[in-house]
Amino acid sequence: MGSFSIWHWLVVLAIVVLVFGTKKLRNLGGDLGASIKNFKGAMKDGEAEAAKTPDQIAAEAKVAEEEQQRESNKA
Image (cartoon, rainbow, N blue to C red):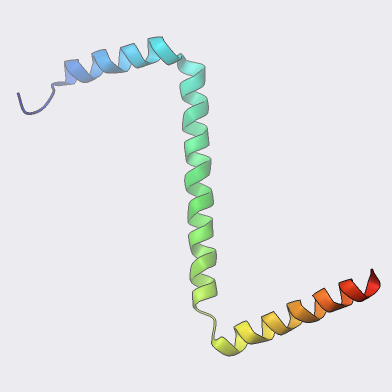
């Protein structure tokens, strides 16, 4: 009674395929895979950002501020 047998899972899988169809399930799997890939990429970017020293962060902020001032002066 604690766990389901393989036959229970096969019946559930068959019902899901009948309800949603294989095309929708394939699209869902592809979307899930793309989401995981994007999440992993964002995690790597976050780790790279966390590894920067405060001096590097301050320098990048200064450059961004200067670019923003140049853009506002052009307008």
